[in-house]
Length: 404
Ligand SMILES: Nc1ncnc2c1ncn2[C@@H]1O[C@H](COP(=O)(O)OP(=O)(O)OP(=O)(O)O)[C@@H](O)[C@H]1O
Figure 1 (cartoon, rainbow, N blue to C red):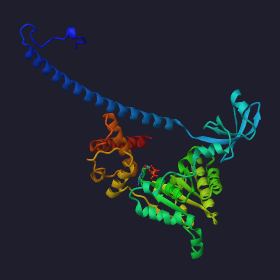
Figure 2: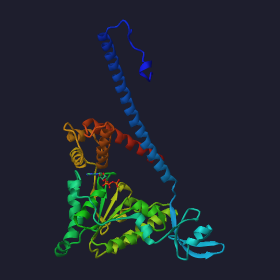
Figure 3: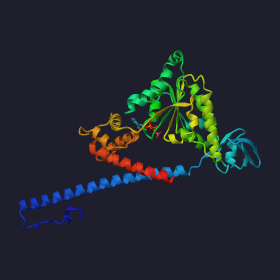
Figure 4: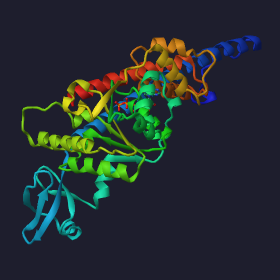
């Protein structure tokens, strides 16, 4: 292609063509070039979008890869510092071991120091104090910013959570006067991304309670040997923060049906679950603490945790129906600049099988599509393209879970 005006090959004979003809020919050429330019620009945008998609995929896979490579650490306490190395005692199984350390690490260590060790019992890092581990697995929010208005399509579930968690916190006297015990624990079960965490946060917000969240999988997989102790800590932190709502996510990780195998991992899980049950059983005068647990794997739960006095109120949180999806679209687009032609009822019908979390992702992605197209208004086509993208991402996640 020519870069300078001198090099341009003119589509007419300079001498013989009239001025009028020249203008016409040049205008035609300009039109052609403009439309080519437009085409190239579209292609470039598509390529950029594609590039973005692969970039995101790459990031996700890199993250997944990193997660897979991180093996869990065990917690131990330093018993003795000897010339031959450091004697540590593992939590959980109380096994002692002699391990070598570098001079730098030795300086940081002391008798009774808590350390994290890897599979071969080498010290990986020192844990400064108890709150360190606590902070890693416990999320404490004085006042979560989710209200019932932010939840779409779970009317019945909201009603039930309000009766079983909110009422006992707000009107404990009523239960006493009537002479019944409020339900001990409430178990929310259903597919991922359907609003279980939101429900627990909203009830804490409504009752001005502190929201304390712990994920079952972190309890048993992050710091092996600490599970039971962390459960004790969890209830202690709740007592310190009354009124409080304890939310145990992925409870199946600590309360899965007992397996026959007696691996140390299983024993650890058992100990953690026993601690949870004993905290709940011995929690007669629970005061202003309510417990909500959540799971995506109801089928895997050990029935022991569902006995009366434990998680004895079960609430199913399903994927939203069409009406629910429409409400969730409305909630998540409250602050978005949506074009007049966008009809959430139509979209809700189209995004069959979408969870609440999917609908939220669609709204954010639709906004991204508008930005990419240099627009500030989000159109119907953006939402549709976003649904395609969210579906593709969900499929990718399924694949990486299968290979994990
Ligand atoms: N019913 C809903 N109404 C409004 N937003 C929702 C709803 N369900 C999910 N969402 C959106 O999806 C996000 C994830 O939902 P949430 O964490 O409550 O799901 P969950 O059921 O606890 O999922 P998981 O089982 O994966 O922990 C929320 O932050 C919210 O933005």
